[in-house]
Length: 123
Image 1 (tube, helix red, strand yellow):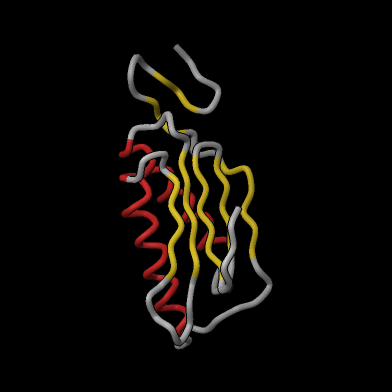
Image 2 (tube, rainbow, N blue to C red):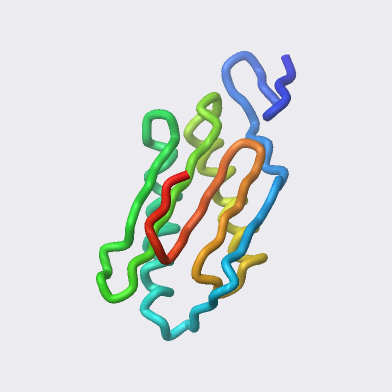
């Protein structure tokens, strides 16, 4: 059977990793900025934890108080955990390629989304 959001067989789906939008904050950071370390932590943690969370929906914050980074990731709940991981990897790569050194960005794909900011948010 085919599904609009992804291609499905009996039990598993292939994630639809087509990009719907990538948005970038206008502010920038440098490689030596402590925010770079916080961002690396947040994005790695989002990729690692979100696929193991019930409902594939996870918010986090970096543990480094000198430059906090806040993050959120979510996947279509019909995906398998490995497919959520795949989708988030594509979303992260498209976001980082489009929004180089930005203090905030969001990548929305059909089956997943990932976002980070320098301030707390909920969406």
